[in-house]
Image (cartoon, rainbow, N blue to C red):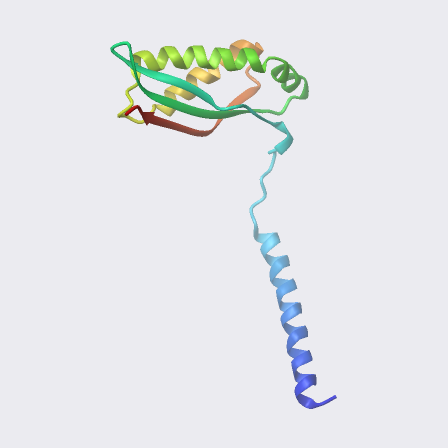
Length: 142
């Protein structure tokens, strides 16, 4: 084997070992999420709520949320009650949007989250489900 081929093989092996070592170090240094179970997440379809001003539609709020439920029995109950949860969410947010929202201002996610959490707790008769936002958008009508 010529010297240049032998040297190229040595360099290739060195680089391969170095990459493997860096991968192991990176995996060890990566923060671990303790206690988070991806199967505990229950996605929901997006909600759309009209924003009114003087009895006219002035905009639309789109919100997508999901529920994080670690308890299997409670998650099963939530799956069974998803239509009721969606209805409760839409009713609560429609009332909020008709009084407190404007299509020219961003939504108050803290207030919206508190409302959705109250509805979730009431519908499931438990505090074991956590409401998580995916997105919230407001679009003004033209």
